[in-house]
Length: 408
Image (tube, rainbow, N blue to C red; front, side, top):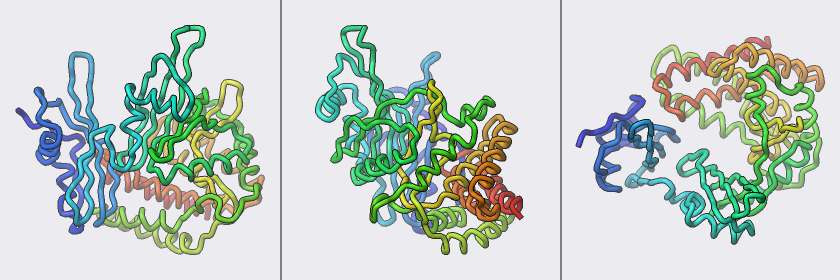
């Protein structure tokens, strides 16, 4: 049987702490692991694609793959993951079995999920369709449960299902309470299974603000700032919500990039960025309640014109300027790596000017936070394993420096 190619073809520096790290990108090694755990299929897949990589240099790595078969006009895929931890044998996950997400296997099964719905949501549909939206092995998954009944007049109900490590369930529920202070529309929780790490939420119809920006019809910046200002001014009890930790985020990104980048030019830009962001991250402290992961793809504009916040898990003690800086960073990133660059850059400028005028912030203070958020984003090409990930990371770091320079 032929050994399927692994796409994209990528290469990283050797990792002494994880001697088998480079094997994650070797098609012979990956295919052998697949066949050893699942048995050789009757027909070899056309290819194996690397979908995602979580990497802690010298410590751990999880790579997610999809084996793809082409059957006529159809592409059938089988997802799996391989985890490496220093000093331990590798672990093989076959979706939806994931040892870190104990509820995923049942929640992702159209056979077993109805029982979960009946027990934890008090919903007993005649038919249930399960759709996978996103899967990050070892971390989280998002599913859709689409329920229907015998009587067509009852229509159907779509619930979004968040699957996570069980210890994160209470954190998500707490963050929802805090996020309501913003006045944004947020999904309603209709059930949870804490031991399995599963939460069901209502679906909110609408288009993302990111999509609206690309079409040239985004909401006025002050409508977004209205909700943020309400959130920032809300009271928060001691120990409520997990504080934003910019230093940990910075140290993780700096460590990943310093171990992954190989060109002298990229290393020089990295050093230039860390010279500024390192001292800032060490000195920074949270000041108010904040969203802490705020950007255009986290919001929807509903058919009624309301703004809905659909992801709010990081809400807790944070920094108003960082909420805005993070959104500016994502729009600058999408203007370069996405589409509709002019529309995105124009809206970023409008949002920046509106925030500076409204709150009287110093441009340099906002710029360093936008740069910090861009620094975190610069690691995404490694997660997504673009074939040209090293060049994309270098461009990301150049955006960091550009954001700093524009404020001076």
